Amino acid sequence: MGRLNARQKREFNEAIECSVDACPKMRNGLGLYCSKHHGLVTFNGSPLQHALTSPDLDTYKRSLIRLIQHNRNHPALQGCLTLISKWLEDFSQRAAARGDAPPTKWQHELDKEVWRLKQQNTSPWLIFVEVAAVHFFSMDNPDRLAPVTRQYKYALGRAMLLAKGHRARYGCLGARIRGKVVCNMGEACSTAFRRVFEAMAEPFKAYHANTSSRSEPLRPSDIERAISKPIRRTSKE
Image (tube, rainbow, N blue to C red; front, side):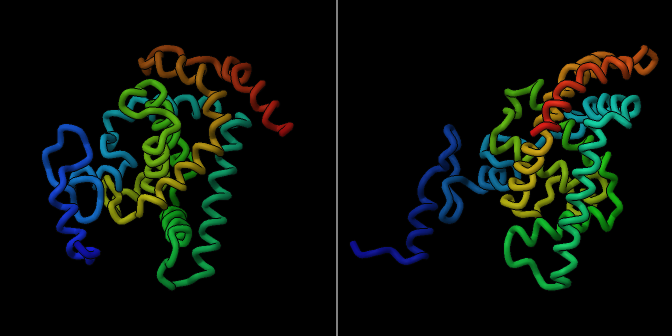
């Protein structure tokens, strides 16, 4: 049998079952998965990873908003705000320099998506809350979203690129944004915010456990003591 042409390769591959165990569907095109699981890989980074929903994250966002309201001027949170603002500015400048030319690489597409966030006046605080909510959900529910995995990076990237307002343009999945763009944005978030997330872990638990809006929140001085040591260590690096 000679070499198969593109059409024959596709037909041969589509006669094979999806690579996900217990999935009886046939593969899609030349990929390893059926159309359903291929879509999950594209959107979420894994054929078994389903998208997080608003109910999954809403309680985490409320806790983060309360923490920020009581500690808005803390250097850890101000550092995040500065970093996100710088990202918005840097990406936007690169996108503006290319003008209306269509993106030719995933880096160009990433620049354009972040530029859209800036054009919609998306608040850096809102972006931080969206990203941090995904992180703390992952820490509490590793069976649904394992920390420091490809799908975790996808979730972080989508949280930033599809922050409130931007999400309305593309829908909840943001199908228009390529997976590589999302994953690289998520990796940047994971690297940049790792120390701050670690420093916030204990005070966040206290805020999150205190779910009643009428109960007394954790004192800002407790947050200062919990976060100050990692921040000082980071500043020396």
